[in-house]
Length: 199
Image (cartoon, rainbow, N blue to C red; front, side, top):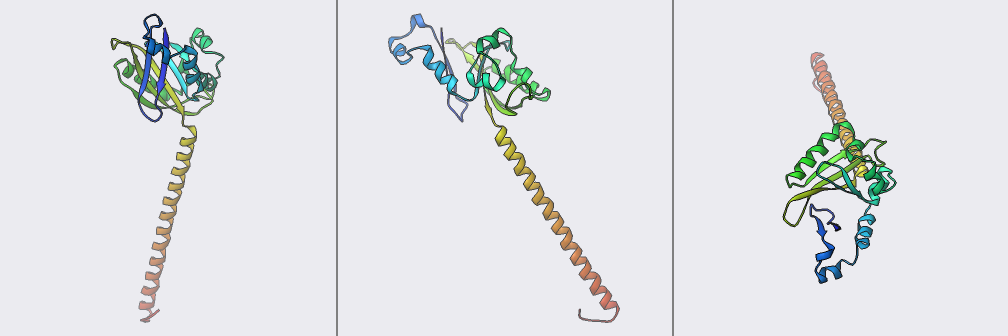
């Protein structure tokens, strides 16, 4: 059986096609020359692409995922029962479990997850979890794609810090301006008290 992954970047459109080689249409067979072509496509992606069974056990991970998680091979990761959830910080693990439950119901979920330093060489990823269905529409597996957004999160944090600094400066300027007004009022009151009209 040939497994074909297709994902259109920037959308939630994920297509996973399971093809029985024995009953393959000749035109389709011509279009899909061999499994190696699709393996190359999947392995070309820097994203971490994973396929899980319905219990969350790993069935496949691409080269981008092997690199991210410092794994030797997909086969070894499967044999060693590698768990994606164990690479996440404790606080984010429930999000992944919930996304898996949603996939089992037929839903696609996007979640932001943070990795432990031991679990991955990426800090923050945007993970898409989706169901894989057979020809009859039965959910038979779970598909996961995670994209490194660590740099974007770093820029976002820097921007938030700059906005906070500007807001703090605005408060300081308003306080300073109010002090100047108060001082002017005190000077005016003092001059009026001393009988001076102008200042």
